[in-house]
Length: 266
Image 1 (cartoon, one colour):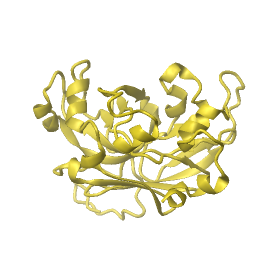
Image 2 (cartoon, one colour):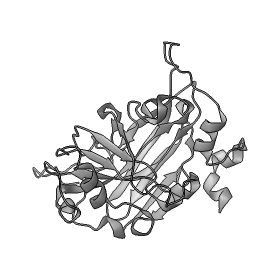
Image 3 (spheres, one colour):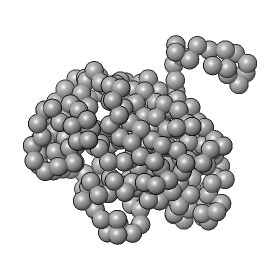
Image 4 (cartoon, one colour):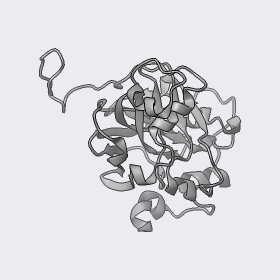
């Protein structure tokens, strides 16, 4: 791997940082047709995108560890494309929005659905944990992201797959134009563009990867962390709602479906 300053680095041994330094990370809900159907939302029931935010402390890099606390069980992957803003952007039209995007990177929007029944929909504790937004390995420009395919792998097995231009409901230019009506997007800011269907839980020891054709492949490792020292606040919960979101169904799910849901459902 050749760096900008001419040095050569062994990519297999390099330590990777996120390829951006954002002031904010904005995520869109239900932006793939398959995910909207899986989540029981008809495509006409959500005429405009809705959003939530992840804290900057959730950033993680290629090959970084993602921690699942020992008292939790519903840590879901969501493979996504991250659109990285390249210049100060405010009140732009859709046709101008592409010029405001510095490039794209594979990303993960990790969610701890043991906390699904709290935070009134903001998902602060579900998706705001440290390390829950891996992005990388690098930033790629000069491609039409709508022509690419996104795939998520669990331990080498494909668990999510979608052709972006066919599945994505609101393309990155729409999201940039919409958001910039309300706030200034700064260089390095991240827009997470949504995930296809089949987001499912991971276990410590798993390897999760997100590949975007023409862009790259992000790899992260799931590890177990300690139970928090404080017992205050909303506890991890095994509820019907947590399981509905974690597994995409209402009923309690057999273990073999947890371990290999995509293979079992094809």
